[in-house]
Length: 509
Image (cartoon, rainbow, N blue to C red; front, side, top):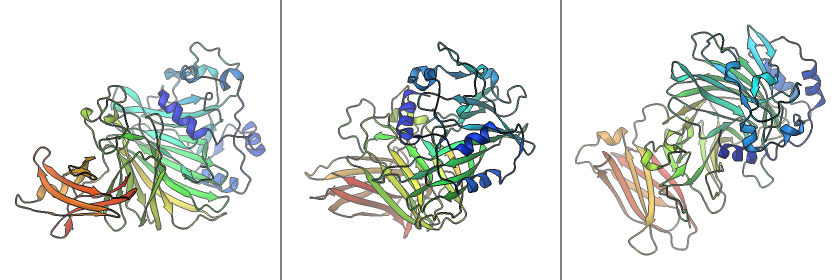
């Protein structure tokens, strides 16, 4: 956990936890038996029943020494590694708990599931090292979330694989990566003038891992003023870390502005967008583009932007095959940052399972003046509102990876840059693409380049081989005239078929 993570959490949590816990949840916890039956439908039934009741958030009350912690003081509360759950048994995973305090005040109930039985995980101050702080008086303070560790990089060391902490946020890494962008349970009213609603994972049931099996299951109960939801995460860490996600949403009210499989990331600047950025590094971002594989089979690359004003883009589709926020530049020279190591941040790809119907991938780009804020959000929004007292299921896979899974036949856009044109009033765009069908083009090939603009004029569009990368380079000039915003589209085709991803970009003055 770094200072940036804490500041991001402050943005996410500031509007969520406003009141006291519901009486029924408080009473249920106080009377909770040591063992209760548990199966694959347990959390779904809990969510269905909770949706019939009015929403009240969980408690935040903490002793004064914990409620007013600074960031550095909170970091000093460390779970003792020798107390990690399942450590003595030598199982493939270990679990550590997060203490409540600082920004993470809401009490989150934790359970372990084994043999078809759920057992509450009890709080104990001996689980934590409080460093220079006074140890709290022994009482049932509860937890703020948890993280899972496993031998993902070395067989003899349990690295952190994923963490669930703060609202409905969670993060994960694949082999050789460090934390970057986050996923969320749901996004509600994102970029809505009336303000965003941040749902909360208020309870987790973690299934005891099985010996020799590189797979662990986590169940979660989500709650918010607008809905409840049940989640099942099947987690498989490795070269790509995969979350198999089953979710069921139970709206309390009609929901027209819900986001399914939301992703949250940071983009400050890149060679395409660094105007006014007085920084020594070539680029600063956790993700540099939105990749989409549409239901009609088109692969679209949309470079991210740090706009002057809030921007919302909607890419309509039917039954999407996938979308995600990618970090494509994997070389240290692209960032030159020895501390942040942006080249090691994960990409995150959403693979829908089954038909998701009509809707669109929505991209929200929020202006930011630095790298401490997550300012990029992407999610799927169904065309039709989710109706109160309905039940809606979404199944998908999350791939924490270097690049989207599979072996696409099309060339990938690997770099995009922009600068002043040689001709006054113009902007020069330069795009590099490589791999896939581009590698199979004959030496004499002259692929067809199509570049279009919603306003202004495109001139000097050229596609040529790039001997330095083994790929192709596209360049063109945009003359926007008096337009303040222009939608650009670039396609490279051979024999009438695409040979590279379609590039979409919104230029703003």
